[in-house]
Length: 354
Length: 149
Image (cartoon, helix red, strand yellow):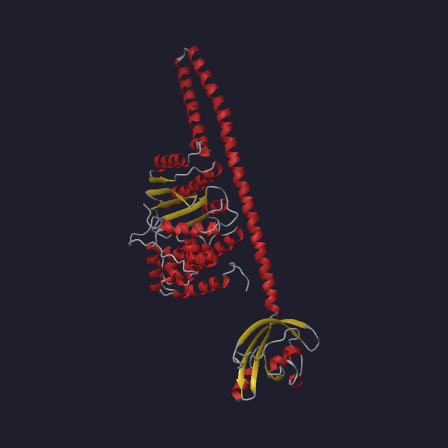
Protein backbone atom coordinates (compact mmCIF):
# COMPACT_ATOMS: atom_id res chain seq x y z
CA UNK A 1 0.00 0.00 0.00
CA UNK A 2 2.83 2.38 0.85
CA UNK A 3 4.31 1.63 -2.60
CA UNK A 4 1.08 2.80 -4.26
CA UNK A 5 1.09 5.90 -2.09
CA UNK A 6 4.71 6.62 -3.11
CA UNK A 7 3.75 6.12 -6.72
CA UNK A 8 0.89 8.62 -6.45
CA UNK A 9 3.02 11.10 -4.51
CA UNK A 10 5.78 11.01 -7.11
CA UNK A 11 3.38 11.68 -9.99
CA UNK A 12 4.07 14.92 -11.92
CA UNK A 13 0.27 15.30 -12.25
CA UNK A 14 -2.13 16.40 -9.56
CA UNK A 15 -4.14 13.40 -8.34
CA UNK A 16 -7.15 13.56 -6.06
CA UNK A 17 -9.38 10.73 -4.89
CA UNK A 18 -13.03 11.70 -4.58
CA UNK A 19 -15.90 9.87 -2.82
CA UNK A 20 -19.41 9.39 -4.16
CA UNK A 21 -20.47 12.75 -2.63
CA UNK A 22 -17.87 14.51 -4.74
CA UNK A 23 -15.64 15.30 -1.73
CA UNK A 24 -11.89 14.98 -1.82
CA UNK A 25 -10.61 12.13 0.35
CA UNK A 26 -7.00 12.28 -0.70
CA UNK A 27 -4.77 14.73 -2.61
CA UNK A 28 -1.16 14.17 -3.57
CA UNK A 29 1.65 16.69 -3.19
CA UNK A 30 1.32 17.97 -6.77
CA UNK A 31 -2.43 18.63 -6.28
CA UNK A 32 -1.73 20.78 -3.22
CA UNK A 33 1.04 22.60 -5.07
CA UNK A 34 -0.99 23.13 -8.28
CA UNK A 35 -4.05 24.53 -6.52
CA UNK A 36 -2.15 26.41 -3.76
CA UNK A 37 -3.80 24.70 -0.79
CA UNK A 38 -2.31 22.87 2.17
CA UNK A 39 -2.96 19.16 1.77
CA UNK A 40 -5.06 19.03 4.94
CA UNK A 41 -7.22 21.87 3.67
CA UNK A 42 -8.01 19.98 0.53
CA UNK A 43 -9.28 16.94 2.36
CA UNK A 44 -13.10 17.08 2.65
CA UNK A 45 -13.47 19.93 0.16
CA UNK A 46 -15.88 19.38 -2.75
CA UNK A 47 -14.11 18.72 -6.04
CA UNK A 48 -16.02 21.65 -7.55
CA UNK A 49 -13.76 23.95 -5.46
CA UNK A 50 -10.92 22.94 -7.77
CA UNK A 51 -12.98 22.42 -10.93
CA UNK A 52 -15.85 24.88 -10.33
CA UNK A 53 -18.00 25.14 -13.39
CA UNK A 54 -18.17 21.62 -14.62
CA UNK A 55 -19.93 19.06 -12.47
CA UNK A 56 -18.39 15.67 -13.21
CA UNK A 57 -20.36 12.43 -13.15
CA UNK A 58 -18.05 10.68 -10.70
CA UNK A 59 -19.82 7.37 -10.45
CA UNK A 60 -21.95 6.78 -13.53
CA UNK A 61 -24.27 3.84 -13.39
CA UNK A 62 -25.14 1.33 -16.05
CA UNK A 63 -28.70 0.60 -17.14
CA UNK A 64 -29.12 -1.87 -14.23
CA UNK A 65 -28.20 0.84 -11.68
CA UNK A 66 -24.73 -0.62 -11.00
CA UNK A 67 -21.70 1.67 -10.89
CA UNK A 68 -19.56 1.31 -13.97
CA UNK A 69 -15.80 1.61 -14.11
CA UNK A 70 -15.33 4.33 -16.68
CA UNK A 71 -12.54 6.59 -17.81
CA UNK A 72 -13.24 10.04 -19.13
CA UNK A 73 -10.88 12.70 -20.34
CA UNK A 74 -11.91 16.35 -20.53
CA UNK A 75 -10.49 19.82 -20.86
CA UNK A 76 -11.80 21.93 -17.96
CA UNK A 77 -10.88 25.07 -16.06
CA UNK A 78 -8.98 24.69 -12.77
CA UNK A 79 -9.36 27.23 -9.94
CA UNK A 80 -6.51 27.94 -7.50
CA UNK A 81 -6.83 29.08 -3.89
CA UNK A 82 -6.04 32.66 -4.99
CA UNK A 83 -8.99 32.45 -7.49
CA UNK A 84 -6.69 32.43 -10.51
CA UNK A 85 -7.70 29.97 -13.20
CA UNK A 86 -5.87 27.74 -15.64
CA UNK A 87 -6.79 25.30 -18.42
CA UNK A 88 -6.67 21.74 -17.14
CA UNK A 89 -6.53 18.35 -18.77
CA UNK A 90 -8.64 16.18 -16.48
CA UNK A 91 -8.93 12.40 -16.46
CA UNK A 92 -11.58 10.79 -14.28
CA UNK A 93 -11.50 7.06 -13.54
CA UNK A 94 -14.45 5.69 -11.60
CA UNK A 95 -13.72 2.62 -9.50
CA UNK A 96 -15.47 0.57 -6.87
CA UNK A 97 -13.63 0.28 -3.51
CA UNK A 98 -14.46 -1.09 -0.05
CA UNK A 99 -15.64 2.46 0.79
CA UNK A 100 -18.06 2.50 -2.12
CA UNK A 101 -17.83 4.19 -5.51
CA UNK A 102 -14.75 6.34 -5.79
CA UNK A 103 -13.19 8.46 -8.51
CA UNK A 104 -9.51 9.01 -9.19
CA UNK A 105 -9.12 12.42 -10.79
CA UNK A 106 -5.86 13.35 -12.49
CA UNK A 107 -5.37 17.02 -13.30
CA UNK A 108 -2.65 18.56 -15.47
CA UNK A 109 -2.07 22.27 -16.02
CA UNK A 110 -1.95 22.71 -19.82
CA UNK A 111 -1.36 26.46 -19.93
CA UNK A 112 2.03 26.05 -21.64
CA UNK A 113 0.69 23.41 -24.01
CA UNK A 114 -2.17 25.69 -25.05
CA UNK A 115 0.20 28.62 -25.55
CA UNK A 116 2.50 26.47 -27.66
CA UNK A 117 -0.51 25.21 -29.60
CA UNK A 118 -1.68 28.76 -30.21
CA UNK A 119 1.76 29.81 -31.46
CA UNK A 120 1.97 26.69 -33.61
CA UNK A 121 -1.47 27.28 -35.14
CA UNK A 122 -0.60 30.91 -35.86
CA UNK A 123 2.72 29.87 -37.43
CA UNK A 124 0.92 27.32 -39.54
CA UNK A 125 -1.61 29.91 -40.70
CA UNK A 126 1.21 32.35 -41.56
CA UNK A 127 3.05 29.63 -43.49
CA UNK A 128 -0.08 28.73 -45.44
CA UNK A 129 -0.78 32.35 -46.19
CA UNK A 130 2.82 32.90 -47.32
CA UNK A 131 2.58 29.82 -49.49
CA UNK A 132 -0.59 31.14 -51.15
CA UNK A 133 1.13 34.49 -51.75
CA UNK A 134 4.15 32.70 -53.19
CA UNK A 135 1.94 30.67 -55.52
CA UNK A 136 0.11 33.82 -56.60
CA UNK A 137 3.42 35.55 -57.25
CA UNK A 138 4.70 32.56 -59.19
CA UNK A 139 1.49 32.54 -61.23
CA UNK A 140 1.98 36.20 -62.01
CA UNK A 141 5.63 35.63 -62.98
CA UNK A 142 4.78 32.67 -65.20
CA UNK A 143 2.12 34.69 -67.04
CA UNK A 144 4.48 37.66 -67.32
CA UNK A 145 7.26 35.41 -68.62
CA UNK A 146 4.96 33.90 -71.22
CA UNK A 147 3.74 37.35 -72.30
CA UNK A 148 7.33 38.58 -72.54
CA UNK A 149 8.33 35.57 -74.63
CA UNK A 150 5.41 36.21 -76.96
CA UNK A 151 6.30 39.91 -77.19
CA UNK A 152 9.98 39.24 -77.94
CA UNK A 153 9.12 36.53 -80.49
CA UNK A 154 6.65 38.86 -82.20
CA UNK A 155 9.23 41.68 -82.17
CA UNK A 156 11.86 39.46 -83.73
CA UNK A 157 9.42 38.20 -86.36
CA UNK A 158 7.77 41.49 -87.25
CA UNK A 159 10.74 43.80 -86.97
CA UNK A 160 14.25 42.34 -86.73
CA UNK A 161 13.70 39.59 -89.31
CA UNK A 162 12.01 42.04 -91.70
CA UNK A 163 14.92 44.47 -91.37
CA UNK A 164 17.52 41.75 -91.98
CA UNK A 165 15.48 40.42 -94.93
CA UNK A 166 15.41 43.93 -96.41
CA UNK A 167 19.17 44.19 -95.88
CA UNK A 168 19.58 40.86 -97.76
CA UNK A 169 17.59 42.25 -100.71
CA UNK A 170 19.77 45.36 -100.82
CA UNK A 171 22.88 43.22 -100.73
CA UNK A 172 21.52 41.33 -103.74
CA UNK A 173 20.91 44.64 -105.55
CA UNK A 174 24.44 45.72 -104.70
CA UNK A 175 25.85 42.45 -106.07
CA UNK A 176 24.49 43.30 -109.55
CA UNK A 177 26.59 46.51 -109.59
CA UNK A 178 29.86 44.98 -108.42
CA UNK A 179 32.52 43.98 -110.97
CA UNK A 180 35.52 43.49 -108.72
CA UNK A 181 35.96 39.80 -107.76
CA UNK A 182 37.43 40.65 -104.32
CA UNK A 183 34.44 42.87 -103.52
CA UNK A 184 32.02 40.10 -104.65
CA UNK A 185 33.74 37.69 -102.25
CA UNK A 186 33.26 40.14 -99.37
CA UNK A 187 29.60 40.43 -100.37
CA UNK A 188 29.28 36.61 -100.36
CA UNK A 189 30.49 36.54 -96.76
CA UNK A 190 28.09 39.33 -95.83
CA UNK A 191 25.19 37.46 -97.43
CA UNK A 192 26.16 34.26 -95.60
CA UNK A 193 26.26 36.19 -92.29
CA UNK A 194 22.81 37.61 -92.94
CA UNK A 195 21.44 34.14 -93.79
CA UNK A 196 22.95 32.76 -90.56
CA UNK A 197 21.43 35.62 -88.55
CA UNK A 198 18.00 34.91 -90.04
CA UNK A 199 18.33 31.21 -89.30
CA UNK A 200 19.34 31.86 -85.69
CA UNK A 201 16.56 34.36 -85.16
CA UNK A 202 13.99 31.88 -86.52
CA UNK A 203 15.38 29.24 -84.13
CA UNK A 204 15.12 31.77 -81.29
CA UNK A 205 11.46 32.37 -82.17
CA UNK A 206 10.89 28.60 -82.09
CA UNK A 207 12.60 28.33 -78.69
CA UNK A 208 10.62 31.23 -77.29
CA UNK A 209 7.28 30.12 -78.62
CA UNK A 210 6.99 27.09 -80.94
CA UNK A 211 4.55 27.88 -83.77
CA UNK A 212 2.69 24.60 -83.15
CA UNK A 213 2.06 25.80 -79.60
CA UNK A 214 0.45 28.91 -81.02
CA UNK A 215 -1.80 26.61 -83.03
CA UNK A 216 -2.68 24.72 -79.82
CA UNK A 217 -0.99 21.45 -80.70
CA UNK A 218 0.80 20.21 -77.60
CA UNK A 219 1.87 16.94 -79.19
CA UNK A 220 3.38 18.69 -82.23
CA UNK A 221 5.24 21.19 -80.04
CA UNK A 222 6.67 18.42 -77.83
CA UNK A 223 7.61 16.29 -80.81
CA UNK A 224 9.38 19.32 -82.31
CA UNK A 225 11.30 19.88 -79.09
CA UNK A 226 12.27 16.18 -78.84
CA UNK A 227 13.41 16.16 -82.46
CA UNK A 228 15.54 19.23 -81.88
CA UNK A 229 17.02 17.64 -78.75
CA UNK A 230 17.81 14.45 -80.66
CA UNK A 231 19.59 16.32 -83.44
CA UNK A 232 21.62 18.42 -80.98
CA UNK A 233 22.48 15.82 -78.31
CA UNK A 234 21.86 12.39 -79.85
CA UNK A 235 19.32 11.47 -77.13
CA UNK A 236 16.79 9.18 -78.81
CA UNK A 237 13.14 9.51 -77.89
CA UNK A 238 9.89 7.58 -77.81
CA UNK A 239 6.76 9.66 -77.92
CA UNK A 240 3.26 8.39 -77.27
CA UNK A 241 0.28 10.68 -77.55
CA UNK A 242 -3.01 9.28 -76.21
CA UNK A 243 -4.51 12.61 -75.31
CA UNK A 244 -7.83 12.86 -77.10
CA UNK A 245 -9.07 16.11 -75.57
CA UNK A 246 -7.77 19.47 -76.70
CA UNK A 247 -6.48 21.64 -73.89
CA UNK A 248 -7.19 25.37 -73.62
CA UNK A 249 -4.31 27.52 -74.93
CA UNK A 250 -3.02 28.56 -71.48
CA UNK A 251 -3.02 24.98 -70.20
CA UNK A 252 -1.31 23.76 -73.37
CA UNK A 253 1.49 26.27 -72.86
CA UNK A 254 1.80 25.36 -69.19
CA UNK A 255 2.03 21.62 -69.89
CA UNK A 256 4.59 22.30 -72.61
CA UNK A 257 6.72 24.43 -70.25
CA UNK A 258 6.68 21.80 -67.50
CA UNK A 259 7.67 19.10 -69.99
CA UNK A 260 10.31 21.40 -71.48
CA UNK A 261 11.82 21.95 -68.01
CA UNK A 262 11.92 18.19 -67.38
CA UNK A 263 13.51 17.57 -70.79
CA UNK A 264 16.02 20.34 -70.15
CA UNK A 265 17.11 18.41 -67.04
CA UNK A 266 17.46 15.25 -69.13
CA UNK A 267 19.59 17.17 -71.59
CA UNK A 268 21.79 18.84 -68.98
CA UNK A 269 22.20 16.25 -66.24
CA UNK A 270 20.85 12.79 -67.04
CA UNK A 271 23.49 11.51 -69.50
CA UNK A 272 20.63 9.44 -70.92
CA UNK A 273 20.54 7.55 -74.19
CA UNK A 274 16.76 7.51 -74.43
CA UNK A 275 13.83 9.45 -73.07
CA UNK A 276 10.22 8.31 -73.22
CA UNK A 277 7.41 10.86 -73.21
CA UNK A 278 3.74 9.90 -72.81
CA UNK A 279 0.65 12.08 -72.96
CA UNK A 280 -2.51 10.50 -71.54
CA UNK A 281 -6.02 11.76 -70.95
CA UNK A 282 -6.99 11.03 -67.35
CA UNK A 283 -10.08 12.24 -65.51
CA UNK A 284 -10.62 15.32 -67.72
CA UNK A 285 -7.01 16.26 -67.21
CA UNK A 286 -3.72 15.48 -68.88
CA UNK A 287 -1.16 13.07 -67.42
CA UNK A 288 2.38 13.43 -68.71
CA UNK A 289 5.17 10.94 -68.01
CA UNK A 290 8.77 11.65 -68.90
CA UNK A 291 11.20 8.84 -68.08
CA UNK A 292 14.87 8.70 -69.01
CA UNK A 293 17.43 5.92 -68.69
CA UNK A 294 20.20 8.17 -67.44
CA UNK A 295 22.36 8.20 -64.33
CA UNK A 296 19.59 9.36 -61.97
CA UNK A 297 20.36 11.13 -58.71
CA UNK A 298 20.24 10.61 -54.97
CA UNK A 299 17.12 12.45 -53.77
CA UNK A 300 18.38 12.49 -50.19
CA UNK A 301 21.39 14.56 -51.25
CA UNK A 302 19.86 16.62 -54.03
CA UNK A 303 16.67 17.64 -52.24
CA UNK A 304 18.48 18.47 -49.01
CA UNK A 305 20.23 21.40 -50.66
CA UNK A 306 18.52 24.44 -52.16
CA UNK A 307 19.21 25.60 -55.69
CA UNK A 308 17.63 22.87 -57.81
CA UNK A 309 15.32 25.33 -59.46
CA UNK A 310 14.44 23.04 -62.35
CA UNK A 311 12.83 20.46 -60.06
CA UNK A 312 11.13 23.16 -58.03
CA UNK A 313 9.72 24.84 -61.12
CA UNK A 314 8.28 21.57 -62.41
CA UNK A 315 6.44 20.97 -59.13
CA UNK A 316 5.34 24.55 -58.70
CA UNK A 317 4.00 24.92 -62.21
CA UNK A 318 1.97 21.72 -61.89
CA UNK A 319 0.49 22.87 -58.58
CA UNK A 320 -0.15 26.29 -60.03
CA UNK A 321 -2.35 24.63 -62.63
CA UNK A 322 -4.26 22.81 -59.87
CA UNK A 323 -2.48 19.54 -60.53
CA UNK A 324 0.17 17.36 -58.96
CA UNK A 325 3.63 16.21 -59.81
CA UNK A 326 5.90 13.35 -58.82
CA UNK A 327 9.62 13.34 -59.53
CA UNK A 328 11.47 10.18 -58.55
CA UNK A 329 14.99 9.00 -59.10
CA UNK A 330 17.80 6.96 -57.62
CA UNK A 331 21.42 6.60 -58.70
CA UNK A 332 21.68 4.39 -61.78
CA UNK A 333 17.94 4.05 -62.37
CA UNK A 334 17.15 7.12 -64.43
CA UNK A 335 14.62 9.77 -63.50
CA UNK A 336 10.86 9.79 -63.93
CA UNK A 337 8.72 12.89 -63.91
CA UNK A 338 4.98 12.37 -63.82
CA UNK A 339 2.50 15.21 -63.62
CA UNK A 340 -1.19 15.76 -64.10
CA UNK A 341 -3.02 19.01 -64.70
CA UNK A 342 -6.76 19.56 -65.14
CA UNK A 343 -7.58 20.73 -68.64
CA UNK A 344 -10.34 23.00 -67.41
CA UNK A 345 -8.02 25.17 -65.28
CA UNK A 346 -7.23 25.14 -61.53
CA UNK A 347 -9.70 23.37 -59.25
CA UNK A 348 -11.54 25.26 -56.56
CA UNK A 349 -14.49 23.11 -55.51
CA UNK A 350 -14.38 19.43 -54.59
CA UNK A 351 -16.11 16.95 -56.81
CA UNK A 352 -17.76 13.75 -55.72
CA UNK A 353 -16.23 10.40 -56.53
CA UNK A 354 -17.55 9.34 -59.95
CA UNK B 1 -4.85 18.21 -31.50
CA UNK B 2 -3.70 20.68 -34.12
CA UNK B 3 -5.04 19.57 -37.48
CA UNK B 4 -1.81 20.13 -39.32
CA UNK B 5 -2.72 17.43 -41.85
CA UNK B 6 -6.46 18.09 -41.79
CA UNK B 7 -9.16 16.18 -39.90
CA UNK B 8 -7.23 12.88 -40.07
CA UNK B 9 -4.09 14.31 -38.49
CA UNK B 10 -4.00 11.71 -35.70
CA UNK B 11 -4.05 8.84 -38.22
CA UNK B 12 -1.35 10.51 -40.33
CA UNK B 13 0.85 11.02 -37.26
CA UNK B 14 0.39 7.38 -36.26
CA UNK B 15 1.37 6.33 -39.77
CA UNK B 16 4.43 8.61 -39.77
CA UNK B 17 5.46 7.16 -36.42
CA UNK B 18 5.23 3.59 -37.74
CA UNK B 19 7.24 4.17 -40.92
CA UNK B 20 10.71 4.18 -39.27
CA UNK B 21 9.84 0.95 -37.45
CA UNK B 22 9.63 -1.07 -40.66
CA UNK B 23 12.28 -3.72 -41.23
CA UNK B 24 14.36 -4.03 -44.42
CA UNK B 25 12.17 -6.98 -45.41
CA UNK B 26 9.05 -4.87 -44.89
CA UNK B 27 10.51 -2.17 -47.12
CA UNK B 28 11.29 -4.71 -49.84
CA UNK B 29 7.74 -6.06 -49.60
CA UNK B 30 6.24 -2.58 -49.90
CA UNK B 31 8.50 -1.82 -52.86
CA UNK B 32 7.42 -4.96 -54.70
CA UNK B 33 3.75 -4.31 -53.94
CA UNK B 34 3.98 -0.71 -55.16
CA UNK B 35 5.56 -1.79 -58.44
CA UNK B 36 2.82 -4.38 -58.95
CA UNK B 37 0.12 -1.73 -58.73
CA UNK B 38 -0.88 -0.30 -62.07
CA UNK B 39 0.49 3.24 -62.47
CA UNK B 40 -2.71 4.38 -64.17
CA UNK B 41 -4.78 3.27 -61.14
CA UNK B 42 -2.45 5.22 -58.92
CA UNK B 43 -2.65 8.32 -61.10
CA UNK B 44 -6.46 8.06 -61.09
CA UNK B 45 -6.45 7.90 -57.30
CA UNK B 46 -4.36 11.08 -57.13
CA UNK B 47 -6.70 12.74 -59.58
CA UNK B 48 -9.60 11.75 -57.33
CA UNK B 49 -7.77 13.22 -54.32
CA UNK B 50 -7.46 16.48 -56.25
CA UNK B 51 -11.03 16.37 -57.50
CA UNK B 52 -12.47 15.47 -54.10
CA UNK B 53 -10.83 18.17 -52.02
CA UNK B 54 -10.96 21.93 -51.79
CA UNK B 55 -7.74 23.93 -51.96
CA UNK B 56 -7.20 24.07 -48.20
CA UNK B 57 -7.70 20.32 -47.76
CA UNK B 58 -5.53 19.61 -50.76
CA UNK B 59 -2.73 21.70 -49.29
CA UNK B 60 -2.81 19.75 -46.00
CA UNK B 61 -2.93 16.45 -47.87
CA UNK B 62 0.07 17.39 -50.00
CA UNK B 63 1.98 18.40 -46.87
CA UNK B 64 1.23 14.97 -45.33
CA UNK B 65 2.40 13.23 -48.51
CA UNK B 66 5.56 15.29 -48.68
CA UNK B 67 6.51 14.66 -45.05
CA UNK B 68 5.78 10.94 -45.35
CA UNK B 69 8.06 10.80 -48.38
CA UNK B 70 10.87 12.44 -46.40
CA UNK B 71 10.38 10.12 -43.41
CA UNK B 72 10.34 7.06 -45.69
CA UNK B 73 13.39 8.24 -47.61
CA UNK B 74 15.26 8.68 -44.34
CA UNK B 75 14.13 5.28 -43.01
CA UNK B 76 15.13 3.56 -46.25
CA UNK B 77 18.54 5.22 -46.28
CA UNK B 78 19.19 4.10 -42.71
CA UNK B 79 18.41 0.53 -43.72
CA UNK B 80 20.47 0.78 -46.95
CA UNK B 81 17.45 0.57 -49.21
CA UNK B 82 17.48 2.80 -52.28
CA UNK B 83 14.42 1.87 -54.35
CA UNK B 84 12.31 5.01 -54.64
CA UNK B 85 9.14 2.94 -54.93
CA UNK B 86 9.18 2.75 -51.12
CA UNK B 87 9.02 6.48 -50.47
CA UNK B 88 6.60 6.88 -53.34
CA UNK B 89 4.37 4.29 -51.59
CA UNK B 90 4.68 6.19 -48.29
CA UNK B 91 3.73 9.42 -50.02
CA UNK B 92 0.71 7.75 -51.64
CA UNK B 93 -0.45 6.22 -48.36
CA UNK B 94 -0.11 9.46 -46.38
CA UNK B 95 -2.13 11.33 -49.00
CA UNK B 96 -4.88 8.72 -48.83
CA UNK B 97 -4.94 8.73 -45.01
CA UNK B 98 -5.05 12.54 -44.88
CA UNK B 99 -7.75 12.81 -47.54
CA UNK B 100 -9.72 9.98 -45.87
CA UNK B 101 -13.26 9.58 -47.16
CA UNK B 102 -12.57 12.16 -49.87
CA UNK B 103 -10.63 9.42 -51.66
CA UNK B 104 -13.79 7.43 -52.14
CA UNK B 105 -13.18 4.02 -53.60
CA UNK B 106 -9.61 4.97 -54.57
CA UNK B 107 -8.35 4.85 -50.98
CA UNK B 108 -7.23 1.23 -51.20
CA UNK B 109 -5.20 1.81 -54.35
CA UNK B 110 -2.84 4.17 -52.57
CA UNK B 111 -2.85 2.30 -49.27
CA UNK B 112 -2.44 -1.29 -50.40
CA UNK B 113 1.39 -1.48 -50.75
CA UNK B 114 1.92 -0.33 -47.15
CA UNK B 115 -1.16 -2.08 -45.80
CA UNK B 116 0.65 -5.33 -46.55
CA UNK B 117 3.03 -4.57 -43.67
CA UNK B 118 0.76 -2.26 -41.64
CA UNK B 119 -2.54 -4.16 -41.44
CA UNK B 120 -4.23 -1.36 -39.49
CA UNK B 121 -4.17 0.76 -42.66
CA UNK B 122 -6.46 -1.67 -44.44
CA UNK B 123 -9.43 -0.40 -42.40
CA UNK B 124 -10.28 2.21 -44.97
CA UNK B 125 -13.14 4.73 -44.89
CA UNK B 126 -14.41 3.11 -48.08
CA UNK B 127 -14.26 -0.40 -46.58
CA UNK B 128 -16.17 0.78 -43.56
CA UNK B 129 -19.01 1.73 -45.91
CA UNK B 130 -18.68 -1.44 -47.87
CA UNK B 131 -17.24 0.37 -50.85
CA UNK B 132 -13.71 -1.00 -50.80
CA UNK B 133 -11.93 -1.44 -54.06
CA UNK B 134 -9.25 -4.02 -54.63
CA UNK B 135 -6.47 -2.49 -56.73
CA UNK B 136 -5.86 -3.91 -60.14
CA UNK B 137 -2.59 -5.77 -59.95
CA UNK B 138 -0.19 -6.59 -62.70
CA UNK B 139 2.33 -9.38 -62.86
CA UNK B 140 5.89 -8.44 -61.78
CA UNK B 141 6.47 -6.22 -64.76
CA UNK B 142 6.69 -2.88 -63.00
CA UNK B 143 4.89 0.17 -64.19
CA UNK B 144 5.56 2.70 -66.86
CA UNK B 145 6.68 4.96 -64.06
CA UNK B 146 9.20 2.45 -62.83
CA UNK B 147 10.60 1.42 -66.17
CA UNK B 148 12.08 4.19 -68.22
CA UNK B 149 12.54 3.26 -71.81
